[in-house]
Image (tube, rainbow, N blue to C red; front, side, top):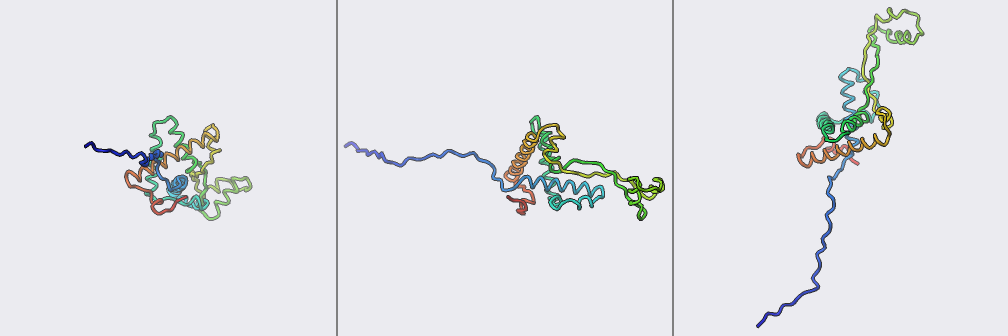
Length: 203
């Protein structure tokens, strides 16, 4: 006796949803990471040349730094930009350095070795004192030191002889690379910046 088959036509359809693009989940602000690294770098320069007062005179926001361990990791990430196989990698690196660290400028500082001599020397330089410079100069030491001034995007554009939009594009390209770099570092190696572990920087 033949077997009777029953066909069910009302079986539920399986809906296949398209797979969305997968991206790293980013829960930190890379601009704050870069800013604290720039502050750390300026602080190190001022301390190395024994001019901590120049660092302390900066606004509070410019004195918030990352840890030494974070600085090493961030510095490595910055150098990785130079290894990118793209024509403008050096431009991206330079823009980030000028924006977050700054441009070095050499200034002359007069350090008094005898009492009020420094103020008197400044008067002589300004042409309002009649005492010969050689006599004043016996009590002073002339130092040539660095100060560092972070540049705005407009300042960088003028320095590189380009426009604001081009500089902004380079800056964002560098920041996007760094965001992916640190996300991949955590995902692949489990290494994370101290400031992110401590939830020190978050949107």
